[in-house]
Length: 128
Image (cartoon, rainbow, N blue to C red; front, side, top):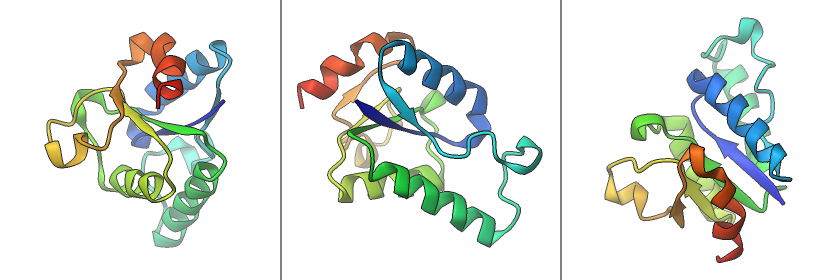
């Protein structure tokens, strides 16, 4: 199973830890270029750089069986919202780590699976 991991890169540490936890569960996590950022900054260098990173994430989505959105304290930035829309358009089932508190967004999550309960992720996706 391949799972696209979606989150703001400002949560780089949580992304890396989640990817490691998924690998231990026998799941292939997809998050292209997590460590490719120049100086590991949390900002794209310019619009062209941002677009390249976004397009690489969408390409990874096309390889995914499912998507997992890491949303610390419910935070979902603009880029992650666009990734959600892309996943939905591609009919990729999505789960969130936490509720955003916004029903207009939360209604798209097939399940809320906290990061500390990732062992439930296979069951959740298999039930879809």
